[in-house]
Structures are given as C-alpha cells and as structure tokens.
Image 1: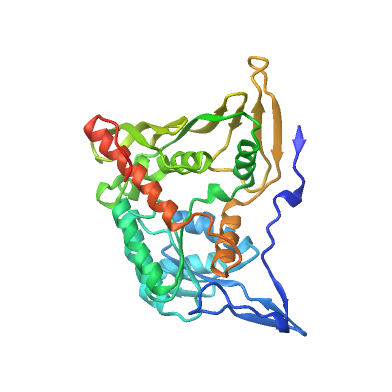
Image 2: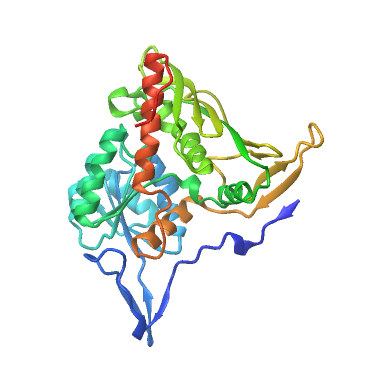
Length: 375
C-alpha cells in the first residue's frame, strides 16, 4: 500500500507578514484585520456567524470551522433564542442571537455559513451579502439554476463572495483522484459511476417537504453530479433521468440519471429511502479508480483510493492511503484563502449555477421522458 505523506494534505493558511508587507484582502470594501505579534503581523481569523442551528451545522460544520487554521465561530442565530443559546453554550460560541437579522447586523462577523432549508438559501445569502458578509451556503445553492443566477448580480454589486458547500471537492482523496486522471494513470476518462443512499422517513424533516426543495436528488444526487463535472472538466451535453415520488411526501425518494459528456458518460443512482451506501468508480481506457467512501469521508482516520489496471480480473490493484483529513475544515480554510485573495473558491458561483442546470435537466427529463440539455 502506498502512503501519502502528511505534507500532501497540509493546509496552513495563517499568514505571517512583516509590518512593511501588510496586504488587504480580495474585497476592497473590507480589508482584512491584522493582529500585532511583536514586530510582525498575523492575519486575524475569519469571524464566522451561523444562520440557524441545523444538525449539519451543530454536529459537523461548526466543529470543523473551530478545528480549521483560519476561522473562529463568533455567533450563531436561531429564530428560537433558547435554541441558539443552547447551541452556543454546547459549542463554546461567544454570542447567540434570536433572529438572523441581528446576526447580519453584527459588525464583528466577516462571513456567514447558511445551512437553512433549501428554499431559504438564496434569500438569506442575498441578505448576508447585502450586509457585507461573505457566504458559505449549503448545497444545493438554490432551487433552480435561474434562482442561483440571481446571486451573480449581488456578488458583483456588493463585492462579497459566495461558495456552495460541496466539501468533497476539498478532500485530499478527491484531489488525488483528480491528479491521477490528469496524469493519464487510467488512460482516457470514459465513464464515472456513483451511488449515494440513506434511509429516513420523517414528516418533520426538511427533506420531506417538496415546497422547501426536499427530495433525494437535491440532497445527495447533487454530489455525483458535481464530482463528475469536475473530473470530466466539462458540462454534460445532455442528461436523461428518472425518479419515483414518495406517495405521502411527494418528494423523490429513489432515482438515477445518465449524463452524456463529450467523449464519455457518467451515471449515478440516489435514494433517501434505501439502505445507506455510497461508492464511486472512475473508468478509463487502461485503468479504474475505486473510491469506497466518496462523500462522508471520516475526519479521524485514513481513507483509501484503489487503482486497478484490469490486468488481473478481480484483483484489488494498488491501494493509495490518504492520511486522515477533515474535508469540512479544509473547505473553511479554502474559503478563507479565497476571500482574502490568496486562492480560488473551492466551488465558484459559476460552477454552482452549472451544477443546478444539470439538476434542472434531470427534473425535466423525469417529467418529459426525453434527453434534456442543461441550460
């Protein structure tokens, strides 16, 4: 087994600058703060505010930001002040607010994490940018590509940046897969297959509400879409998809799609009412890459990427061990670097809009029964 050394996954963003070399961040309207340390300056951490006490925020994203190199969670807001205070006390967050508006008015917040239900992603992302905050917004970034495009004008007008929280793109295992493909290790990329499922039947869950953008496609089908587009480095030319609706909740509970790229294809299945499982495989003309835990990679133990040349049927091939990495913390660090002007966003807004266009095409195809072109 090949072991990647830790420096392959290192991601230190704390920048030490002499007094003569102070820089402002990417946003001309908000120069970044610096903390004096003797005769040197250290870039102060990004001060995060969180809109809502959603499970993904409290259990996963907030602790990851607190573990990151670049950020501190300074405040959390909920429409229930007691709930906000409970989360703040449990997580060691300094301030709790009983409304989202109060958090956005706080001048001591640099960036906002938006894990609200899907139908509130765009409205509150716009309000946060108008309040002078950069935004990390949970996926899907919008309910449609058209709605997502409304963020472009706000970004350009305010100078604030927005990033969709596809944390998988920050994980070293996917950086490794991307590099293997680019190096020609599996020949020409021709096919990607993926599956993502879990089982949950709960009328109170936001994913069970169609008017809130519920359903498995929006929740987890979006992951193999974004990864396939990223690995092919292109938008699919056409898409065919289908799904079945839950008879009670009227949200999609099981489905699949085929994306046709120039020179290749990607196919995936997804479900919110199926045995939990996830897998992705990437097939080239001379090799195959297997990613056993593609989406929910653990942050406290190594992951493995397997490469098979196909010379011996059934053989495991080479296993590449990726050191333990926190993809949510890496996402926060990448976001911080981008808003400071030291790198690109882990997922650009333009890329998010293109991803929503594919989701839209899957929905149209499920209704029309035909191939649809993302637009």
